[in-house]
Image (cartoon, rainbow, N blue to C red; front, side, top):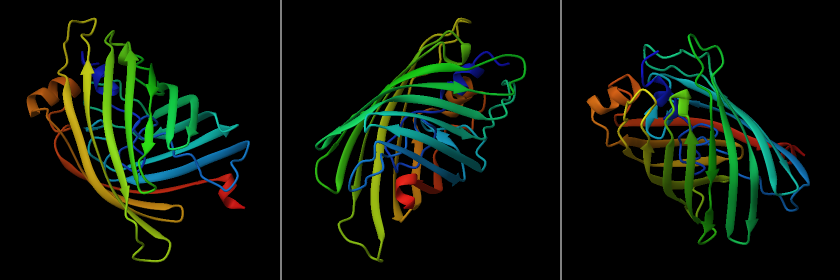
Length: 272
């Protein structure tokens, strides 16, 4: 296992703005709360996504290859939620080579008028690892505010400790915005543009390795038809190839790319 393999795993998963096109139960996203005329006491949201690269916090977690992801989330009393999210992963040579990433998460989420607050915890589980274990915990706080019916701004703060069993901790702060166009070019098709800008801070590991903090950003557009969303966006970081190699074990995981994601999201309450 490379000395910074745990850090490489840590650079995956962060809660991102819904529709931003990244992934993970964190940045992948806690699914959006399903809106119905009357909020049910209990509901289950679920979905699946297909993308050309699993990028999280700007870093590839699938060796820049195709990824398939899915989730299911129990929502209770319009306040509480708990869910599971999973994806195929492929990290750099020398890592523990897990069979998948499975995120178990839960928390409190509620909307007060235009303001939505979300506080939760997430456990990153990497089953099937060779030569070690890199599972770890992360806490999250994610406020969002609907300035208008079409424009939503959001923020996300994440804190993880003993990341990848490396002994280092990490902070991630990101702000984003999503604007839904006020017209529909095709019946039942809504279009949006969205973007994010964030920074990842990483602490020194027990082995003395001091990973480079970095900036990451994305911008793109998408369209939604019923339960289906197609999202296309540009993603990048400010890491050089050398810095990327030190942080992740592969010099090519942090560069700019175009990400294409096709997702299907619904809930039991929507199937009536």
